[in-house]
Length: 235
Image 1 (cartoon, one colour):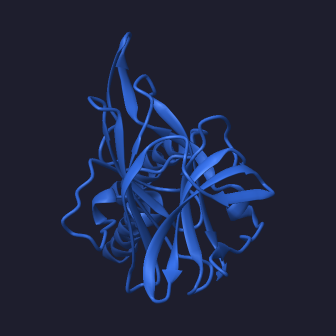
Image 2 (cartoon, one colour):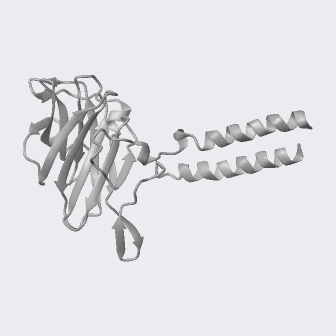
Image 3 (cartoon, one colour):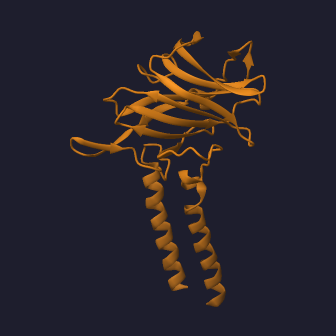
């Protein structure tokens, strides 16, 4: 019996480690930003392009403070984070775009009126405190503050990375699956009851795709642990 019990115990702990591994959970507190003096109440790992977003929403003055982190597709490339006030894709986005200019990081604003028109210029909402930095692990970070409509509870966000900059203009990004899927909804407040709301929760511990896959993983995990526990008891 002793020879059977030890392998069963090993299987039990192996399954347990799989269930709690980082591939199944995201602890936003571990997503550190280089600027240690900056603190944000919410964070999320975005589903594509190995990117993250930290943010704080101040409902009192309708201000949003963000830190977007991603790795450009090349060392001399660019990263961008945007809000689209009118649609869910890139066209119409109001973008913050960062890249290296003569060795220093800069942030530019782009009004992307269409896929063929990427023009540097003033955005449709106020932005301030724009900064960017490059990290030791090859990523870039955009810091910024922006004004949102007072009644808004969610935003259409878009993010992207590109290969380089030519004569001060960002070069076209790739059109792979990850690039084309780099958009989604950013919830600024969370509904807690009928007619009331609260700031978005912080931090978000799991990255659920919204199709119930995370719930199915947890459900399956409980059954696996129950089965292994039974095997241990009978062996």
